[in-house]
Image (cartoon, protein in one colour):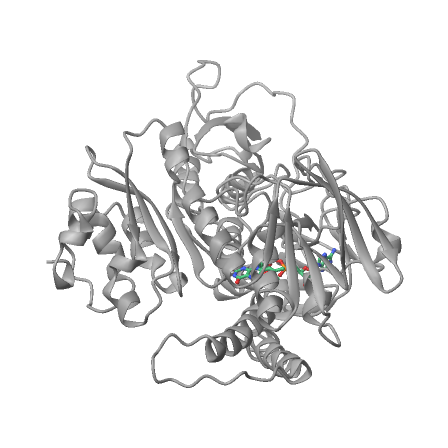
Length: 561
Ligand SMILES: Cc1cc2nc3c(=O)[nH]c(=O)nc-3n(C[C@H](O)[C@H](O)[C@H](O)COP(=O)(O)OP(=O)(O)OC[C@H]3O[C@@H](n4cnc5c(N)ncnc54)[C@H](O)[C@@H]3O)c2cc1C
């Protein structure tokens, strides 16, 4: 005799949760089948041999991290035999090829695979292109080493110190590029290829292009693979805007620009966010005449206006042209030159350069992978919609990194990869927490931010106070004869709460973490202000900016005394 028991489950938010509950119930001795239809249904239905008690089932659910109880309706009062109810289409968890299949070996996929292996899972990781994905091969690593090289050249030519003789340094682009390629190869080997090889029994690397089948298996070539859970970490690629003439004219993207055989004399950069500005300044510092064309009224439109305005000035001081509010109509070629036909505030103009760099955002690698057919929701841009557990709308399928709607950084991709794998393998509490997330734009001066902007804080209904401190008040900046930049703090003074920190300063990325931690862990603004910050460091500027809510920084002595 069998018995059908319905349990009310609390705490399920997604298909992954439903899979956990189902598996936990299916493991209870005497359970023949368990089903939690859809994460948000709130119910699980169990078919069990007579004698399997409700208490044991409830405990199994609780051990999986959820709460279970009998529904309030009186029709199923206990686990004693009930008249036969129509049996749902039960399937016990079938045997799978792997516990976890991860698609993509970038920062997100690697973190998911490693977390899976650490938890004893059998993991397959599938890669269609170069191992390591964007960050190491064509993103963070090559861009940051090239930026540093350009910065060295610029500093050597622009020292502010009396008595320091500066020499105009020669730029050997092929040597800089070769050094970048060597670093990329080294880090790809050490941080990706060797790391995967360190888990020979747990992680299987499969080469090929993966897609999902409608029944949520993974097809690679003619192989069909199954797993308890799938993590999609397929990243994104540069977006080429469909401007008339773009194909015939030929444009660079961030990847091809960093791999140029030789430097062009002039370059038009289309875009005004992180990648456009980082690469634009890098090429300008290597001697290329650079013009930035940005559609929004200001560069870095999501950042504080004070930062956009000041950074625009610094870039212009270095010789970059920055044009905002631009509508580009078409591109064409004139001999060796590339021409942009555009409009600013109703005025039509054309602009020529040796090269055009399109750095206007990235497109998700989600098309053609059978995602929608497998029930996975995409937003209008094709990015995969995920919740805080990284669950997609399809049970047992997770997504992380640039292919999702989440912020596009390698450390958020990696954090998400770890969370997705943990959740998929049974940790119902695993969730991604982005509170206080730091973000850096590697221009010089750099932009580093954490938390809310002033506008966001007001929109969210906080009582907002703002402190803006120019870097000329920071002793370290004075000693370095480099006082470019500012710090803007956003706070709720009544709640003694720091809400946001926005820095424009040389190496601002090295300063932001103090504020990020304060926001993330709710350190009161007064405690942050009273903490010791070492003299002379740029990060001391955060303390000065916190003091500047109440005091005039010009009236402070050394060490913010
Ligand atoms: C120029 C540039 C500079 C950047 N600088 C920084 C920085 O300084 N700091 C920072 O945090 N972030 C930076 N980023 C962003 C960062 O590189 C990305 O956020 C991060 O690499 C995304 O990781 P991911 O794992 O989501 O995807 P990816 O690293 O893109 O990996 C996806 C992988 O999936 C593979 N793949 C795709 N489709 C399939 C398929 N169907 N089957 C099998 N394999 C597939 C791809 O070949 C790729 O290897 C930069 C990006 C760029 C472009």
